[in-house]
Length: 408
Image (cartoon, rainbow, N blue to C red; front, side, top):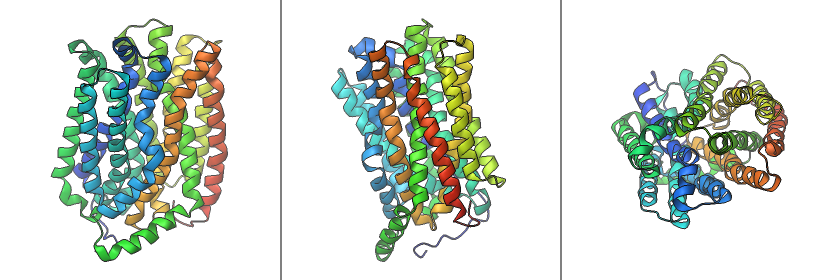
């Protein structure tokens, strides 16, 4: 296979697609396991609210600092190798966390898990693209956006059922099982990822050139910034809704897990709807503007003390559902920005590096606002402001993509 050339599939290998998606779900369970277990971690390790916020965000350290490097590595060494390496790092971080007895040790395990999460997040889309035919690729990459809410929702479902068996460490063990299942599944489907193999030595110079092409595209940076605005909003809810329900409303663990899980999983049909609309030719910019507008409106309602708790909770679910249009639209944009299969990892790395600023900074900023002002409602300006910025960026992305002609 020559550099930059990808022989097209005549049929999509859906088992291979599912295996790559399972790897994403598994690393996403690592992202979500802290949010549902914050109260248990605080009780067991004596963590402050702000420490808990940083513990949740620590998994994003590599994403913020080096996601582009991970993406370029995927283009260089091959998507499958990096994906399996990411699963291995996630397993190592999870195992180290099981032995942690203090905040610094658990934080270190989270950072290692973050390296694994980043490796899978940038490489799995390469596997998805390799395993799918051209006609299905936009849909497949759009549905890829479900890996995050799917993994977080799954661990939230498992938490109340497993916690009684051994506390938060059993939840960490559950995530390890998911990682093993994802890694084995991807390895068994490896023959369907042959277009995602590493370039030969004489292709590496060309790989540098195609990576630079991605970095020079304003649309890639615009989409990354927009992704950051959505990540801040969504992770505000994912991390702090369970804490709010438990500590401010006094709900037991089963109710907290069920209500939080419903909110997170609402993002899954939102992503599927977005992928379907893209497949039918709806402009990506329209979906981005619509998703950001609705998420901001519903976020304001979710934080409004004038509304009944039931309405505020439904607004949280609506934020997650409507916001699903955003990741499905952005993660599928590699069909436009990546002119060759070698550019997919670089684009995914760039967009994730920028977007993870929202995941990294959102939870501790919300915690700081709540701690300084004494109420959750006072923190509304942060997610609503992010949504308003997302609307502006969506409109800019809409204009920029028109320059790409027929690609959408």
